[in-house]
Image (cartoon, rainbow, N blue to C red; front, side, top):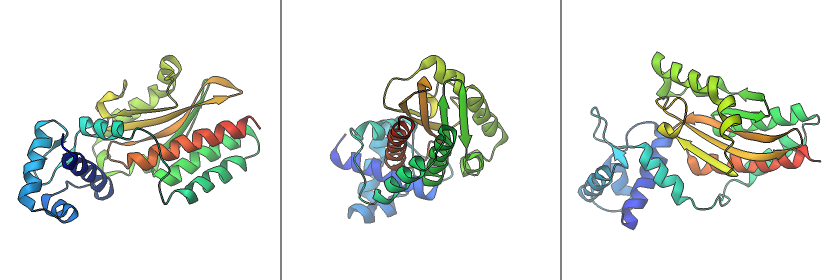
Length: 234
């Protein structure tokens, strides 16, 4: 892929996260200061590579799971975003002000819900904390009953899967069909593993549609995991 193709893919992903509708060449031509024909030519190549697709009802393009994976892999390190200091302060204040461990965990989950507009969750041993179901099912992706059922199936099996699989990375991202359960749910799971005095198998993260602002959400999840670990060991 060329540098411009990488940038166009990133722009499609970021624009689609905001507007929830296919991204057209006219918008991108303004962003990159090139002709719509040039953008369409680059889109054809990105589509050939399987990174974007064209819904039959639209002239615009949307990212594929493969496109999202390429994008997430390109974020080699989670660097603080220019406008995220306020969010970081809110995370630290909410988590450290929880008091008893259960309240600390619930505050952490609720803070992620507010920051990401996704479903927030935490698992410590056999216990799962969850908040923000209305956020998840309020997304336009989940208007079909069959899709809601797939999401529900994923949620039903998430805690036992985490206990069995025990992902070791400080931050893990499972995009769409990469999810070991609910592969057709159209969801992405972003989780941070953290140390806890109550369990060696503790996670916090979010579940949302594949259409989301990965860079921001990954940063918030990682920061919340770090804050939660620190608060529980105080």
